[in-house]
Each structure stands twice: as C-alpha cells, then as structure tokens.
Image 1: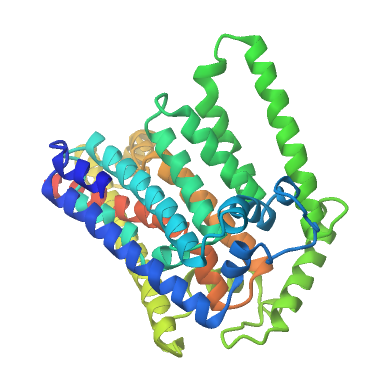
Image 2: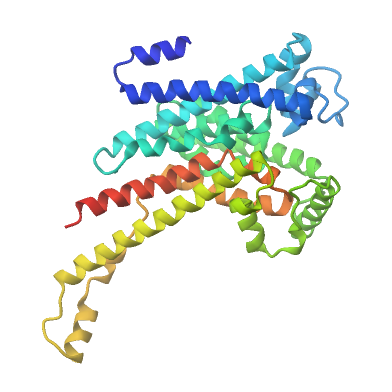
Length: 412
C-alpha cells in the first residue's frame, strides 16, 4: 500500500499507468489466493518447497545443509521463514506473491523506459503492457515456486540492463538467482552479465582477472551441481539423450490427461506442441480453455506482426523502386537498372526494430522452449515452464506490431 500510495503521488506517471500498476497488484494478489487454494486442495511441489520435503536427498540437518541449486536452493530460502519461524503456507504464498509482484514492477518500469525512449516511433504504445496481464504468468508466479524466483531474477536483470550503469548490484543478484534456480538460464545470460559489469572492470586488468576467476569458479560449481542433479558423469549428447528418455518415461508413468507422445514426434512437432498447443479444439476443461486462449492470442499476434512487417518491407522496396526506375525500356535497360539498384542500402534498412534486450530475451525464450521438448511431455508442464518467458517474447512481437503500424502511418 505504501508503494501504491507513492506511485499515485508521483506526477511522472500518468493516470493510465498508475491505474495499470494498481490493477496489476489486485490481479496478482487474487491469483495468489487462487494458487494457494489450488495447491492445498490438489497438492503440488509448492507445498513441499515450503515444508522442505520436495527433495530430501541431501539429508540436511541445518540451514546451510540445504544449500544447492534448483529445488535445494528454494528449500534453503524457505528454511528460516518456514521452519525456524514456523510461518504457514499462506504466509509463504503472500511473501512469494510480493517477490513476483516486484518482478512485474521491474518489468513495467523497463517496458515504460523503452517506450519513452522511442516516443513517436510506436503506434498504440500502451498495447505493450498487455503481456504483464497474462493469466499463466500470474498463476505460476503467484505462490511458492521456482518459476516465481526465476521470473524475479529475469526481471531484475532486465531492469538493470535497461537502466544500464545505474543498478549493477540488482542485475548481478538477478543473474545469480537465475543461475541457482536453473543453471542453463544462467549460462544463457553470461554475455549480458559481462556487458553489465563492463563499467566496473573497464581499464583495470586486476579487476578483469578477478571477475574472470570468480565467474569460472561459480560456473564450475554450478556445472557440477547440475550434473549431480541430472545423475550424469559429464555433458554429452548420449548422456543428454538418455536423460531425456528417462525423464519422458518418468513423466509418462503419471499418466496425466494431457500427456503427449513426445518420443514419437520429430523435433518440429515437439517444438510446436510446446509453444502453441493445446489449440482451442483440443481443450478439455475450463483451465485448458484459458491455456488454449493464450496460445491462440500468441498465434494471432505473430501473424499480425508478420503481416504488418511484411507490408512495411514491401513499402520500403516500393519507395526504392519509384526512385530508381529504369532510364530506358527493354532488356538492356532492365538489366542495367537491376545492376545499379542500391540493393545493399535497401536490404540494410530491413531489420527488426526491436530493442536489443527484448530480442536477446526472446531468443533465449525460444531456446528454452527447444530444451523443454526434451524434458516435458504434457500441456500442463508446457504452460508452467513457458509462462515466465511469454512476457518478454510477446513484448517483442507487440513491439514489432506497434513499430510497423507507426511506419505505415508515416508512409505516403
């Protein structure tokens, strides 16, 4: 309430933005109650995370015995509030709901900053805030979950890189959270981490060497922990293929209603299943309809973005053609025109005018979806794992729509 009060008193934000953030908090808080009620009624990993029973293979006796990556890290975080202080699962849900709302605020501020940087270049700029209201994002980050912490880490890093040079500690903390929750995610964001730390090490050989050594130690420890988690001796294609087969067989044993025969599909079918399915006609209950509607929305904005972008590229070439018409008719004149046409300049102007950071996150999201094809086999898990990546991916798609629409308005 203190934060929202300060927001409404701040004259830098217009009334639409103030209302949007307030509504964001109300929606997210509502989803936290729904999430906790669902878990308490149907069970789930979330309750085990809070009660420190999701993974007991470490046989931990004290707080630091719980420390590790993935499940071990979230249980280490929950040791003090859940075990020492004895807070209830409802209390834990509200704590984690506040964490993820912080991530949503970081993302809102980042989106707003990027939009204001390009004032006048975007049509319908408020449309870019829509990804903050995705139901799947709110549900899977509203309670005690690894998705909650991973989303917070991703948003902290995104915000820090958006406000480059002003919040380095925040970005490093976000990256460490990502690394400890999902090591592969941390690996994917190492280039951005180095970029973030450049002001710190620029011009200092000693600082650069210290940073390199620390990164090597951290990544070595994370790699070892991840190999132990996967029960692998080393990274190899055969080892990963065996892990994929074991993981899919393990998930098949639960016989979930939405299980897909991923082992029988080719790579493209798997990827399409992860990103776009279930479709509306594949729905089987109320929750699956919500998931299918989200997938339909994703397909729709992708098609609109491609259509508008293709049309803007067509206009670009049309304008170039009108400036460089062949000086004489016939085959010789046409050939000369083709040879003299400034193809390089025209092609260089064809680019996806999306902020670099949003593009990077979107590329990582697509890569994560590819990894999910080897380890997941049902619609529920697809929805859960991809939900935290969708705001970044859809922001890029909607940005392309807004930018292309503005270009078409300016075209003669």
